[in-house]
Length: 232
Image (tube, rainbow, N blue to C red):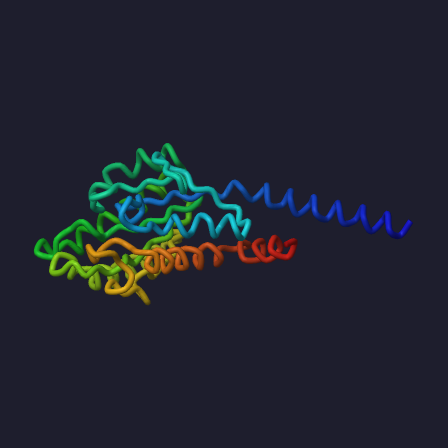
């Protein structure tokens, strides 16, 4: 009798865990950016590391977006700058109103043009566009990875400082903005391919780890991950 009760309790417990995991599947992610988000044949994209890791951990996140490759759906646009992303942000997010937007944008401009103020304005406008459609969306705002393609990308350190200030300002206004520092610990000499811009395997893993850290820090997600791992 006791054995039967134990088996029954175990089955109910496992069913509850499965049901819990299924209920969490509504958390959607829109990866929004340039080629570093889109990926390519000659380098490793962070999504190629992050998505399998999320599945391995049985974490309930789903990538959505207008494009799709072997890894996941996304909204990465190779060669495009933040101004372009702003121009399509309302349309993209209206069609794919994700719970989380991972925004990594800041490349594809030129240091000679002193682009930092404009990039920051455009980034803020993207976030406002998303917020107008869904005030509850959480924005993961990336401080972008550095590049060795100089002097073109000499402005990136300044940009990352201004993006941190932007995140702080918007957070004070009640925006759900989470700053994700991809520059810290990233070395273009060892973490990019020969073009000194796009990530190799180590660079992609570093980016994936930073995104993962932000995801785990979301309310309830760390506890959910621990509960699911306990069933292994």
